[in-house]
Image (cartoon, rainbow, N blue to C red; front, side):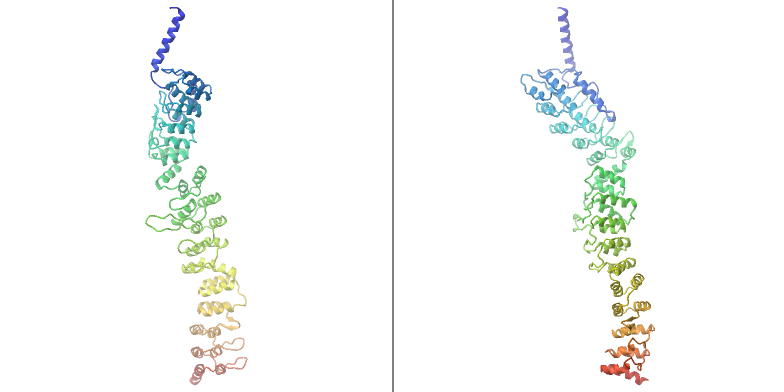
Amino acid sequence: MSESQSKTAKRKENKSKGQKEAGSSTLLKKQPLLSGQSVTKNKWKMFKQEMEKDKWPRCLTNGAGDQALIQSLTTGRVQDIATILQNENLPCSSVCMNKCLIMSSYRGSKLALVHLISSGADPNCADEHGNTALMVCALHGFLDMAKLLVCHKADINRCNQDGDTALLLALNEAGATDMVRLLTNKLTVNKKNKNGYSPLMKAIELSNLDTIQMLIEAGALIDDSKNGETILEMANNKGIEKFLEIYMENKIRNEPVFICAVKRRDLNLVKTIYVSQPNCLNVQNAQGETALTAILQILRDNNKSITANDRNIIKFLLLNGVDISLKTLKKPKGKKNQQLESPLILAVHTDDPDVISWLCLCGAEVNQRVNTDELTPLMVAAKFGHSRALEALLSAGADIEATCKDGTALDIALTSTRIDVAKLLIEAYGKKNPKEAFQIAIERKELKLLEHLSSKFPLDKDIYSILIVALQMGDLNIIKFLSGLGLGEMDNRPLLHGAVKLGKTDLVQALINSSFDVNLRDSVGDTPLHYSCAGDNPELVRILLKAGADMNVKNVAGKTAFFVAIERNNPEIIHALLDKDTAH
C-alpha cells in the first residue's frame, strides 16, 4: 500500500470512529447553557459561531443534501432551503434538519424555521445539554418563532440539563412580557432550575413589574425562597415589595391592580402602575368602583381625613382623564340593585373644597341627584354638616332652591341641626334677595339665622312683608328681635297694632306681657284698641282693656275706640266695651 493510500485509509478510519462516537445523538454543544444570571447573549453568540463553523461532531448518517442545507443556512441563502428540502435527489437526514432547526433559531430566521418544520424537523430536538429551539428563541426574544414552535407542539415544560425551562431563559432580560405569557402554565410557573431560581425570582431580580404580575396571576408562589432569602426579601432589596403586595391583593381580591394601588394611597405607586398600564385608569372592580371612586370611598367609609398625598392622587387621576360620571353597582348575590354614589357626592364627604372644585371643573354635574333619596351634593353637604364642601358647591353654582322629599338643603340642615351650614345657606339666599332670606328665616322660626342675616344684610325701609310674616308666625322672640333692630313698625304701625289687626290673641297677650305699650298710637293716632274695635274679636278687646287700654283716646279724626265700634255696628265689641265701662 502506498503512502498516499495509507493516509486515505487512515482518514476514513478516523471519520468512521467519529461517527461511532457521535452515535445516534442529536446536535451537541461544547459548553452547556449557564443558569440564572450567568446566561448572557455573548455566550449564546459564541455557541452560534461554533455551530456555524461546524465544530460540532458530524452526523452519524449524512444525507446527500445535508451539506448543502447547512451551507445555505450558514451563508444566509435562506431562499435555497425550500429548494433543497424539496429535492428528492438530495435527501436531508433528520439529524441534519434538527441541527439546522436549532441553527435557524440562533439566527432568528423564521422562514428557515418554517421550511424545516414543514419538512419534518423535530420541534423538540435538543443538543446534548438539552437545549431546544424553543429555549433559544425564548432567550433571544424571537416571539413569532417561539409561537410557531409552540403551535407545532414544542414542549414548553421541557428542561435542559441545568434545569432551565424556556420560561426561565426568557426571563434573562426585561421586556419579555409576551414571551413569558406564551411560555407560562401551571407546570412552568413554579419550576426551578438547578441553581434554585424560579421564574418569579428572576423577574424580581430584573424588576420587571408586568412579568411579576403575570406570574403571580398564573399561580407563582410568593412564599418561596432561595438560599434562605424569601421572595418578599428579594423584592424588598429591589425596592419593589409594594408592587409584589398589590399583585397579590389583585389575585386574592380579584381586583384591578391600579385600584389596589390607589387604595394604598401611595402616589408613587399609583404613577408607576399607570405608566406600566396606561389603559388602567377607568377599569372597574366587581362593585363598579373606579380608581377615583375607590379612594373617595375609603376616605368616606373610614372617616379618614384627606391628606396632601390623597389630594395629589385625586388630582393625578383627574388630570389624566378618569371617568367622573355616575356608575351603577353590579347586583350582589341575594340583594337588590344598588346605585353607586357619584364621585362628587363622595368628594363632599371629604369636605375638601379643592377636590370638589376640581371635579366641577372637570365636568361633574353639581346638581346631580343620586340614590333613592334623590339628594343633590348640596343636600348631602347640608345633611352631614360639611361646611367647606358646601361653600365650594355654592361657588360652583349649586341650586339652593332644589327640593327633595325632605325639603331644600336649608330644611335638611335645620332638621339635622347643622346650624353653621344653615347660616351659609341662608346667606346664599340673602345674596340673591335679602328680604326673601329674612322671610325664610322667620317662616322657619330660626332666630339664629335672623341674627346672622342682620349682621350681613341691612334692611331697607320697605320691611312690611317681613314684619307681616313675623306676626303671622307668631314667634315672640323673633318679634322682639326685629323690634330691637328698630323694625318695630310696619307701614307706620307698631307691632302690637299689627298683631291685633291679624287677630293673634296669644301673640297680643305675649306682647302685652313683654311690656309693649297698649296705648301707643300709630301715625293716625289709632291705639291697639281702635284696631280691635274695628275687627270682630271681642276677646282682643277684653285683653287690651284688662291691660289698661284707654277707651277715651281719640285719633286724629277725633274718634274714640267706642266710636269706631259703633261705626262698625258690632254688638259683641260694643258689649265688651260697655262691660268694661260698667265695671268702672
